[in-house]
Length: 319
Image (cartoon, rainbow, N blue to C red):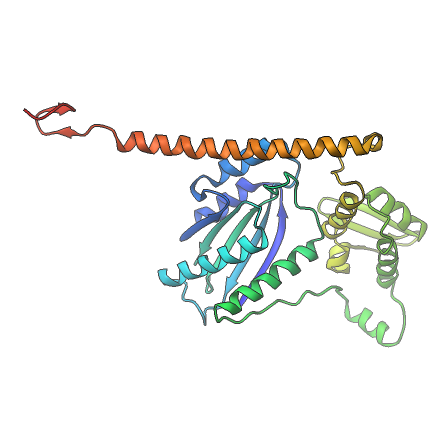
């Protein structure tokens, strides 16, 4: 069986440092695995797309009943399967893969570059959509290798025993009031920014507070408040903001860095953006090609260094 997950990260280098240190096998897709940190950074610089999200961390784990963590043959096999999974899921992304055997089950850590090499744009979408997609592809690939698939169940809502009893009696809990208000607000596809999201909830007597990686929801005029993570995955800060970002990009075709004045003359700007993306793609290809040629030359020079023969020093014909 195989299980998988995915989450966003602000540092590709940090993910690589963690995964590489414990790796027993490694490989890459659209990346030279020994220079992963350098190439992740190079692509971000070439496309001028740094931002807060640099990469996505994913983990593909296999059952100890199917693979022995200490077997090199099994390690290479799960690496082969993982490469097939992630190359199908992210054909235009950089993906660094690292096999770990430090638990009872062999597992592969994947560091997925956020930037699409074809478009120069970052991955934008709902966390649940990403996870559902990678799970479906994993399911298909591992079954083609004769393996079974186990998909962990997501618990969309977390309820206390008191809530469960109230629900059984047909009573609406205060947490349900908050959930219903959020669900109603997010059902309006026109809402694509966090300020509007907060304003609409305020109209429904729900205050929203950002606290680090959490959102806290409060019923106005009461002491009832709950973190999004306690309400369920659908109400977490990451889930809400990812969905709003996806809607914003779908509506305006760009990131949030640009203000509303960008909309003036949008047709001409779209044309210029397409030309710029084409130019960026070519520069990225040239940069990667130059890097590979430079590496090949350096290797060639090292291999061609004269060897010292006995009693004759460096170079020169034998006399």
